Image (tube, rainbow over all chains, first blue to last red; front, side):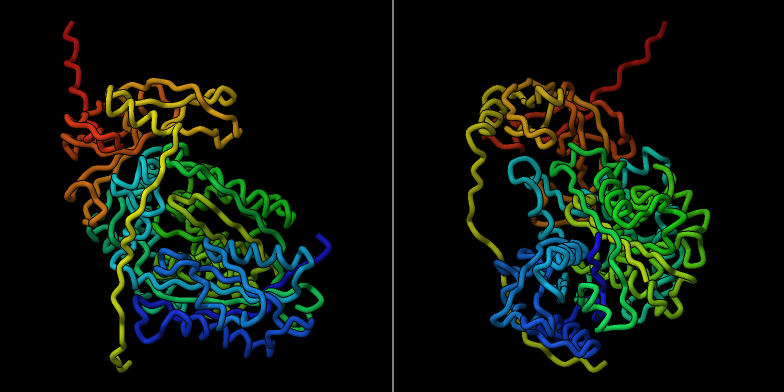
Length: 385
Length: 156
């Protein structure tokens, strides 16, 4: 790749259970304002400012057809361009990058938002993902689908509920170094195990909490990026892959599409040994077992050894391949926003601005996002300083 | 932080809607309703028997048209006990959702598991479909799958 794209600025709201004091547009503007202040950039299509906006949101989550319609006004799209990605925010970053690499845009604002607190239940939203002829009337939603995947994965490889609980405890404890995660606290493995089962084998604390929030970042092509900041974070590799719609078509204990997404990103970034070459990873685990499964899919360990990798301490902040030093999604990061927040947290690590959650000597960071039930679509990005 | 009162509007998405299954898929529901038959479809290129049936193979994009009658028996691959309640649920919690490999199919079917001891649930359990008496041509014409009685140990 001759042309390179860098992340030049970012901002996140605090991630909290409910934000009744802000409507969606205000939540989005909070982060847009911050990235504009950081860069001094204006919205303009004359080659001097932000010339495109990509937003990530979802119609059903927002209960509004074409959910970006109210957002355009606050992302600089008044009489200018804007496009929406109705998937996870990491995929929006991917798409925004592609727009710059195509030569069409120079500087792109990317924003993701979701207010999970607004629907009466997340399960009512995610039930609508499923096929109306064969699956929806069974009451399936992302939570029960994840439980089926958790069982299939844990059964196949002998992953224990304690190993899953350790993921949650690590996340909550790591998040204490992340000022934006308001629910971070000291949490013991025992407390996770004692939390009630909601969909066996998933317990209440194994599932990510209902969260409201938004985040934004600015991407720029190389020549522009170097003018905007002296600390650009380069996107060196990216890949995505989809898996089958029907859960029964997939081997749920495997994550074939993640392996494929990762291999594309690694190839583009010239990474041959992910475990050795990646210094830190921010992955989107909405349920605890997913962090273990995704580390396998990313090639940090062989299939079935995600639990062993965790137990070895390798994924701790001080470990060989720290995973989710920010606390990740399990402590609070809404759907749609989650993957883009991972990109931002990975960029924070590359710049060395992670404070007490900073991993030492980060050169290469990985960010992962996922959309759809049981990790149907995966997006992997490789960031470098 | 001081909490200020904030105005909110209550909404509800409720739109009468019809999803057309199409000519191809309708055959499945007719067979289920009229003959208690569960049909899958074979991809001639991939040699995979798919459930649910579909008219295009997602792996190789071949048009599919070879219907295969699947067994009303199968093997449990994964399951969950749903312990929370939602208006979308067909049964009162706790109830069991299972991923079932029907005999003759290569891909799994999601359905309800009934008449089962929760403690006896495990992958590999043999199951049989229980059909509704008055069937209407929908997936819940299969009420649920129940565990097959365990064969008595052969006492030689």
